[in-house]
Image (cartoon, rainbow, N blue to C red):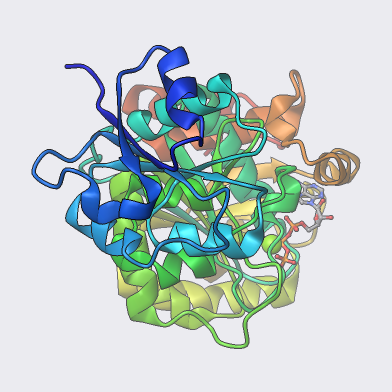
Amino acid sequence: MATSVTIVESANGGLAALVRGAGLTVRVVELSAGLGAVDQSAPPDVLVLDLRTSASVPSDLATFKRRHPRTGVVIAVPAFDPKIMLEAMRAGVTEAVADPVTALDLRAAIDRVLGQHTPEVEQGKVLAFLGAKGGVGTTTLAINVAAALAVEHRNSVLIADLHVTGHGDAALYLGVEPRFSIVDAIENVNKLDRAVLQSLVVRAKCGADVLAAPERPSTRNLEGHQLRALLERLSKLYPYVVLDLPQSDLGAIDAIEPVSQLTLVVNQELPTVRRASRVAALLRQRYGKDRVHMAVSRYDSRAEIGQDDVERVVGLPVWAVLPSDYRRAVQSANAGEPIVAEQGNRLAKVIQQFAQKLAGRPSEASGLRSLAKTAGRFGGML
Ligand SMILES: Nc1ncnc2c1ncn2[C@@H]1O[C@H](COP(=O)(O)OP(=O)(O)OP(=O)(O)O)[C@@H](O)[C@H]1O
Ligand SMILES: [Mg+2]
């Protein structure tokens, strides 16, 4: 079926000509007649709204979008002004083009909103990462697992940074500068469809979408019901949702149903192990032992506390032992490029294998177990 495009613009706006020039058939509605003049009985696939001469988003756009959720909306603006963009996003707009608008820009924006009509997934996997203590390497592991999954599963991976009250690092480690954050997603959770979410996330070079922590930390933690509602939406929109959880907010632990796997990240220091054993008790009680395991970060084979000690004291199995490679980890964070992008790096390899195990391919998981047996003291998967 041909794509139907309606353009709302003034007589000499010129957008209709550009869209026709891009090979699409259009209907034009005079800007002064407003959205009320758009055919409501047969709403278009795409609505292009010319806002280049007005300072705000029409007040009835949100109502229009609620009534016709399948109509994608593209706005043309004089410039990407954050105030208008936020207003537009709240009204359900997912694409904007700025002056000088070209036929190519418009066609690309229209194609993007059309591409957003892909079906929801039944239930994506939610992979959560929680540090037993600050600074153990949780974000490094979470973003690298997301990056490893994104290479194999294009357009399928979202990493959400839940550090609402503190500075989250996921966006920085992935080299992106988001305009919106998880707080905007929470505020819009009731209309969080693929199109709205797409306007809030940024695609990192590795292919994962990033829903970042806010630039300015909020003074309040997320409430359990908000987090639960958000995760339910996200896991319907992405096959893989990776969560970087704040270790300071144990309340969040109670709200991350539906979680598929939770990785408690530890190191070999006594305070971390002690704290891990307390957190593990909570996690086992809440999610059952099959959904919770550990990763030992910055592993030192000569440390006083060995892997067996960690497993015994904490009471969870260790699924990954991450070699210590401080130089590489810091370099990667500074460059905003995940470690897994590097061929032949040992830490990268271990994280890739771990990501595959989390993604749940049974044949590979069992293959990895036998690989670990021959991998020596720094062996990755167990
Ligand atoms: N496997 C590793 N080997 C060596 N250094 C590492 C490793 N993983 C992470 N690091 C380094 O440890 C430091 C902390 O890492 P990261 O930010 O991932 O920890 P975190 O647990 O998320 O910290 P926070 O509690 O601040 O969120 C960083 O300097 C990082 O480069
Ligand atoms: Mg972190």
